[in-house]
Length: 116
Image 1 (tube, rainbow, N blue to C red):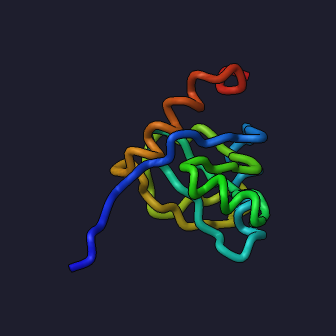
Image 2 (tube, one colour):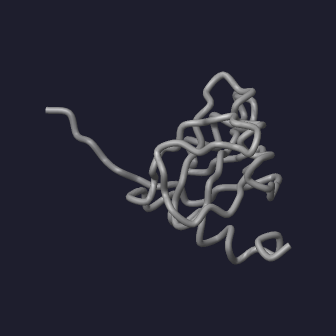
């Protein structure tokens, strides 16, 4: 029988964090092919991985990940969709049960950009 092992990343490196107002985040997400944002613990967000390379694949095997950027906006309560003031609408995926995403949001809230 196949053995399955759950092993979270040891480290995730984030190159850029971009705090947006809700309308700007919705506008940006609606222009992408996959127009869904994630929600966890009062934050609407999306993360973007760096372009794949052999070197990054090796880092993944060593339990490290590199994110190019995280864009986010404060959004207190989860809803299945969110609309901008100009009626753009995107889907929202509830990630509150993901320990990884809850940890990411807790870390994000501890960064200086959170209060800007």
